[in-house]
Every structure is written in structure tokens, then in C-alpha cells.
Amino acid sequence: MRDFNCLQACIFSTDCKKNKKYNVTHANRSHPQMQLSLSKRDVAQLHVMLSTLPIPPLPVFLKLDVSKMSPGDTRTSFEMATVQIVKDAQCADTIVNSHSIIASMSFFSQWNSVNTNDESKKAIMHEKEAVILSLIKNVIGYAETCKKKCKSYDDKEIGDLFLEVSRAWISCALPADVQLEIEACSDFSTITYEHPLHVAMAHYCYSQGVLYSNKTSKLCCEVHTGFQEVYANGPTRLN
Image 1 (tube, helix red, strand yellow):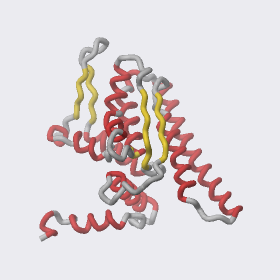
Image 2 (cartoon, helix red, strand yellow):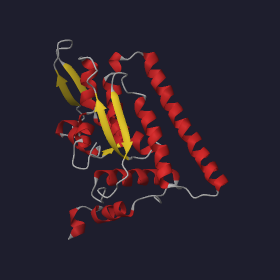
Image 3 (cartoon, one colour):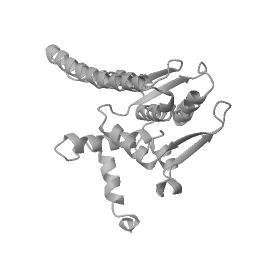
Image 4 (spheres, one colour):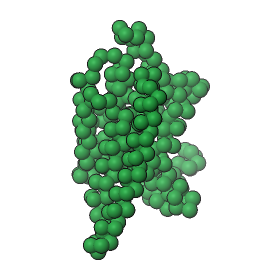
């Protein structure tokens, strides 16, 4: 969420380090004391999911409208799950990490599970599986098209493939009465080495490299490697 590390830092508070849960209590008429919680394990599982997901973090612009949602626990859960990405969209560069949106939808699904029956949960799972299959199909199709036309791969066209599948993945858990629009960011000038999205991509490339490049980090970002070397042994390394 800007990056997702912001929320992680909030969740990994003193109580959470003691294996307690991060709780948000919200009062409303239908449910006098509604609690939304995330444990350290929940966040760790989400990190693993995002690191292994065959969809990279993308810089996107976000438009979100929840005005048609009826008041109640579902709306409260959704608003709490998306509070950080809404803030990201209002920052100076208005760039949002697509993985942050996916994380928000995961939190919402978890918090809203009490209002979702088993059939709906299975349907969402099957939809996500279909999204991954469509990604494989589209990537193979794109590679074959480039080969037939004797053309090189185009970064923008590849980005569009991942943007399409990101939209599809996010929409799996999106309530029907919520309007969410995601558009690609084409100006990367503000995404510098210290930008949260750069950190997210460096972490993702490192994870993918470890997973799929003979257990090494061949895809690791050079900047990320430099930081790792400098701070590997703590502050004494800088003396």
C-alpha cells in the first residue's frame, strides 16, 4: 500500500510482535462492535502470495466509487480494506501499486467472509484460477504473434497483458455495487529508486528470481542488491 509496507509497519506494532492481532473496532447500528483484525501470520501469507503471484506490481491510476454501497458491515469492511490505496491515489503523483489493490481485496475478502457463503467463496477461487489460465494463454498467444510477425517484444504490450489480468484478478473479489477503474501509468519519471513501487518491484523480482531462476536471484534489481550489501550486517557495516 504505499507500498504495502506502510500497512505492514502499522500491523507489526508492539502488540502484533507479541503474536496478538491488529484490531480495528467500528461501531454501527447493525453490529454495535465490529472488529476487523489481521494477525502477523495473515500479513506473512499475503506477502508470500504477492511474491509468488505471476502478476508483477504495476504503477496504475485508481478511481474508486463506493457511493452505491449500502451502509453496513460489508461497506465498512471494504472501506477499511481500501483506506490506504485511496490515500495513495490522492498523493502528489497519484500512482498506486497494483499489488496494493490486490492486497486490499484480499483483506476485504477475509473480513467479509462471514457475509459470504461457501458457494460464493468457491466461485471466487475458480474465477482467480481462470484468470491465471487466461494469463498463460495470452502470453503464449503474444509470443506466437511476435514470432509470426518477426517482431521484438514490446514492453508496453506486455504491460497491457499484465494490466488486463490484474484488473480481472481484482474484480473477482469486488462487490457488484462498487465502481473501480484502473488505468496504466505511462510516465515513470516519478518512480525513482526511493519510490515505494521501485522497492515493491525489486522485492518481486528478487522473489521471482529465487523461485524460477535455478534458486538464484538473477532477476534481482541492482539497487536492491546494493542496499542489501550495505545494510546486511547492520549499522556497524557503515563505520
